[in-house]
Amino acid sequence: MDESAKEPPRPAPVKKDAPFAELPGRWVGEGRIGMAEGKMESVKCRATYFVNGTGNELKQNIRCASAGGKVEVKSNVIAKDGKLSGTWNELVYNLGGDMTGEVTQRGFRITVRGGDLTANMDVIVMNDRQIVEIQFFNSSLRGLTLILKKG
Image (tube, one colour):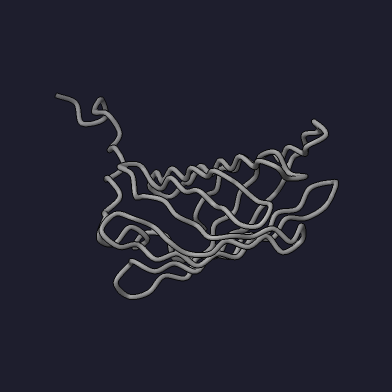
C-alpha cells in the first residue's frame, strides 16, 4: 500500500496521570467572544502554559484582545487521578472562582464557580492545536471560542 494514502496519525489520548505534559510553552490563535447584549467580536489570543516536571500541575495565562476590549485569565490547575481542581480568575472583568473538572480522552472538561460566576469550559487538545470553548452564565460575557496553535 502506498504510504502517502494512509490516514494522518490521530492525536494520542490525553494521559490521566500527566495530562498537562504536552502543553508547556506559548500558544497563539484567534476566535470569537460573545457579550451578554448579543454582540459578537473577533479576538486574538496568546496563552502561556507553565507545567511542573511530572505534568500534573499547570499555571496558565491567557490574554485576548478584541475591538471592544480585553480579557485576561490566570488559572492554576492540579490533576489527580483524572480529576482537576484549582482556581480561575479573569482580571479585566474581575470574575473568578474555583475550578473543578476531569481529564477526558480528548482534553479537559471544566466548571468554574465563584461569587457571581458560573462557567463551563471544554478544551480539546489535538497535537499542536487546542480548541477552547467557554460558556459563561450570569455574566457580562456570554462565551468565548478559540483555536490556538503552539508556537
